[in-house]
Image (cartoon, rainbow, N blue to C red; front, side, top):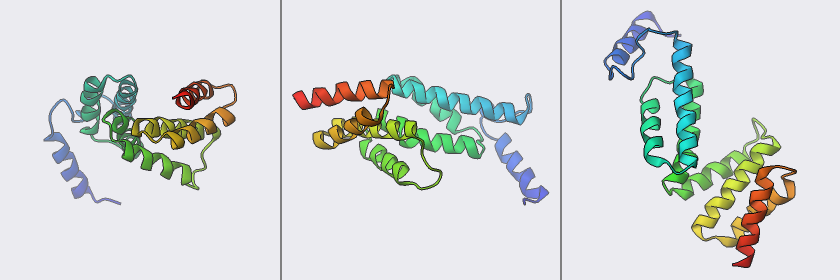
Length: 163
């Protein structure tokens, strides 16, 4: 547990940050954290719609805020997936997805597996690794049930098989 002096030092350092980024006590701290998470989620969505400049500004603002453990985990997730994909850092996305698929705890549900395999298909398509892309799209087509991911993967796989 932190002592009072180290906590006061953290508060002092935090208050020296840019005024628009620091916690000013005008709202409860948990509300402050929810706003930071909302910004991170908005940035993630904007990256997925190729609105990279707007996403980057929001992401950096949220990243520079004082984040709790959950918000930090969300930031790292976006950094290694959505942001990396938008910036063309496909090998980072590949490593992130493979690591997530291999993790034993917490166990992934079927939807998260589909999302990761679909993302790997997209990565391999961008890298020109046709067979690996087809393999991941096929996983989604065979295990996707009645989801939009199944449909999108089937279409992407057909297009790759025609090429």
